Image 1 (cartoon, rainbow, N blue to C red):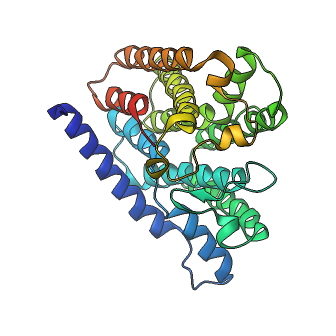
Image 2: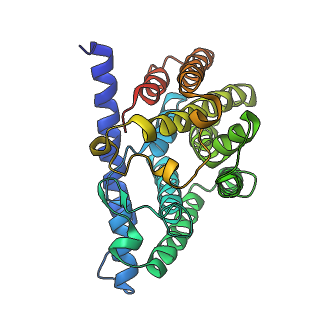
Image 3: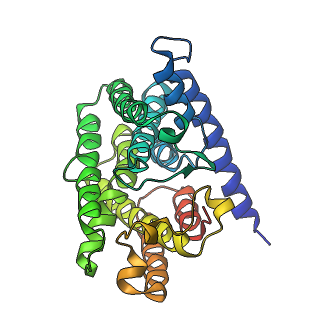
Length: 294
């Protein structure tokens, strides 16, 4: 049975998801605007649902640290979701993971075609930076660029591709997961805090929190790919094994993977208690990541 605190936490996430969905619908070009096929493809992927974890982290961080200007944080939060969606579109392509399903629907290259999928991903990257620029903060723009560049998400993706079918060690898989997935999740928490103008000491603690939940998120993703429910996941279970992907359980074993994910979540929660603000949402989101089923 869920506690009242857990129920209120889930309601908080639902409210933020609805807000992000509404904002994304507003920010995206309408389908009837030329080129129609590209805009239909963009909206098909972005509005297909999802946890909206990255924008929620940015919104939570901004609000918990005293930010009040929706015109600043809303575009920034949605920019993070557009970047995340673009990375999924490209990740699903035949030259990468060659997946058929995403969030219970045909992947974009299956629904349309490969060329449209590539261009849709590129377009979302462009739209994201247009939105993040609305904040007026060059620091935030640079933070996002670093998180998704060769020292962040793209670097992790390259390492992931190069590790396919090879025996790797813990350092290798740590690098892949902390960059491919963790970097953007970490940036999401930090961007909200930067826009709320926190001091560098608190920002350092926020970064540690972001690193830990980001790493834990991908470990759990690997676990779910092995033993998750395909209906809840909305994608094929076992695709990592099929594609000879490097995974955390495959490197350290399933029991150790569960132990390490739980430890990261506990450490993230402990760090969140040092933020100097009364905000239970950081703790709940960490628990939510640790217990998620999709």
